[in-house]
Length: 308
Image (cartoon, rainbow, N blue to C red; front, side, top):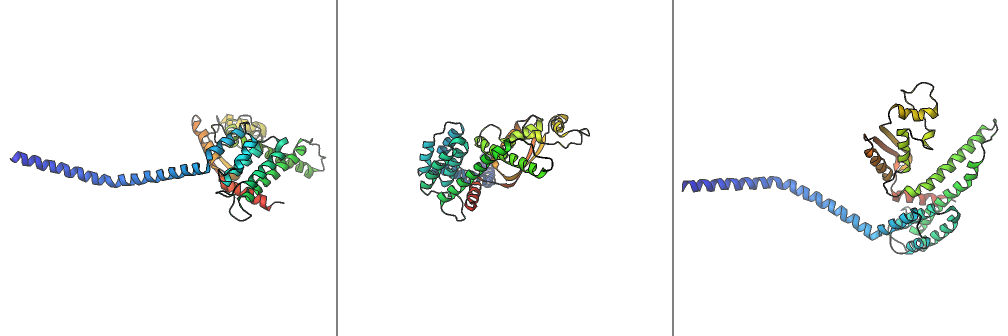
């Protein structure tokens, strides 16, 4: 009898210990459950938004445009349809306009403008500060992009003109040089629209950073000057650029600062590039402001509404 009572008491002690352990672990389990529920709700919200806006359909259309297989008639029909937000439609129209053949730009712009004007009012209107409804704001944004493209076209002959300014006309030579650089920058901005969608390739800013860090030939990097105390005195700007990276075996740390609007896509592309290097590079990314797709479209609409 005494042995049985002792065994029962020991069993009670074990049960009490298990219960105490369960109670102690209950609070962390509840916190973990709340965290999982929060992330599940976020995921569900994102998936609902993707389905509501038909984002895969617009993404596929943009991919086809950038790969050269887009169909203008299909895009116009998509813009006139009731699927997608005003922002989604504006983004698709901008991609199509910037990626189209310059000879067809006027016709493409007219058809895109007509489609946006006829599109039913949807959610996610472009801009929020007056200036008309979603269609009017989208047309204003498209108008500003058109003006940028026109400036690029007008400056192209100036950039191709021979640099033969007289010695006493330094300010004229500087103006011509500025116009040429501006034209090249605008043309490059238009051309690089084909690399803006997420992909495994390097974005323009990442290619520039790679060229500078490795001392590789690059049309923009070749104009950079390396200020390195380890370089010999008297090194020219052209030789210093490549010599700086070569002397250090390639720069392992870089600070990339964008004058103007930066974006998460560029930041993530740089981080992915840095992590793949051997050894990994350390890259800090900054900008005057971080520009979301929505705020970028709003800025275009504001600029288009304020323009002539």
